[in-house]
Length: 180
Image (cartoon, rainbow, N blue to C red; front, side):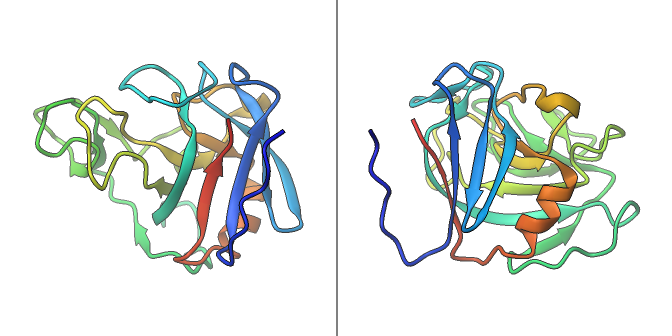
């Protein structure tokens, strides 16, 4: 049984039934809520395109939100309005790999401005960003879940109502711990 990490910093704790499960629970202080994980479950050594959620403890870097769909959310995290041209480079080997980019973009990059509402709020999880390992996984976010907690490509996803509850409690010192 895994012992809890003692820390004075607030942290989100993500657990699932098994390493291969794509559904889990996120606990943040007194709150516990369902979450979706990667289609391949969780993994220690994340690789680009493997569909797994990376196990580890990470800083929450900043949040983006769709101002055309919601009011500015209350949060202690750095917050930016999402741009229609916003993207996230997922091209291993590119100098902007695992960084925000603007479309049109010559290399492969995920679009952040989506019609399906999954990215109405996106919190950037500090996986593989300081330092970066090319092909070590990119675009790992905390975002809105699909109905029924359908699997993500490696992110952690919450119901929109739960995301609002979590956002208001986040601070720059908050970490996310994705348990093995």
